[in-house]
Figure 1 (cartoon, rainbow, N blue to C red):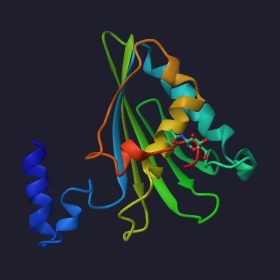
Figure 2 (figure 1 turned 120 degrees about the vertical axis):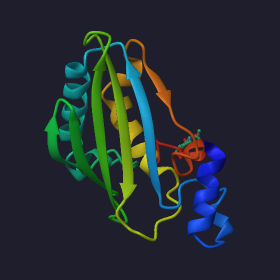
Figure 3 (figure 1 turned 180 degrees about the horizontal axis):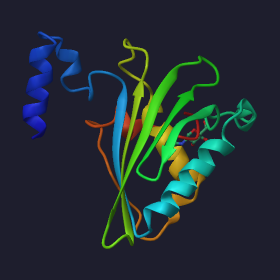
Figure 4 (figure 1 turned 135 degrees about the vertical axis):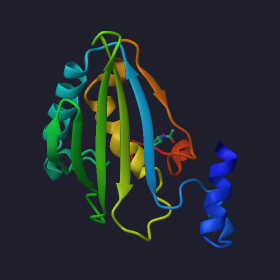
Length: 165
Ligand SMILES: *[C@@H]1O[C@H](CO)[C@@H](O)[C@H](O)[C@H]1NC(C)=O
């Protein structure tokens, strides 16, 4: 799976080999999260957090936990934008929520993508766009919390410092 994806990327970029091992071709991040909570609770926690970090004031002490903008929200799909406070880069984020275990558990498939087509590295910003909402809302402490991602799915995931980004 992993190697066939890498091969595909190497072919389509016609030998731009620096991208082959660096992770996604475009700065982006995809994360799967699992909770022993109903999706309704996960949904409410995420939407509340996005609204709480709406203005630039929550970045007054540094970091990028601010300037989130809710685009649309339903219990199955949340869409938002995040703007970095200094350089004003805009990233599109979304969370797809699906229930399992007779509605007692929730699987969240999350994605963040930089709008700038030329952004190849992002210091883990796309990962932090998603993780900061999970942590800020307390969901990282929720029952059954589990995260699945990798550097291949998320640009610079392993070196991300979400206190800064
Ligand atoms: C992340 O950055 C903060 C602020 O610069 C620093 O205090 C902290 O040690 C860093 N964490 C890691 C894991 O590098």
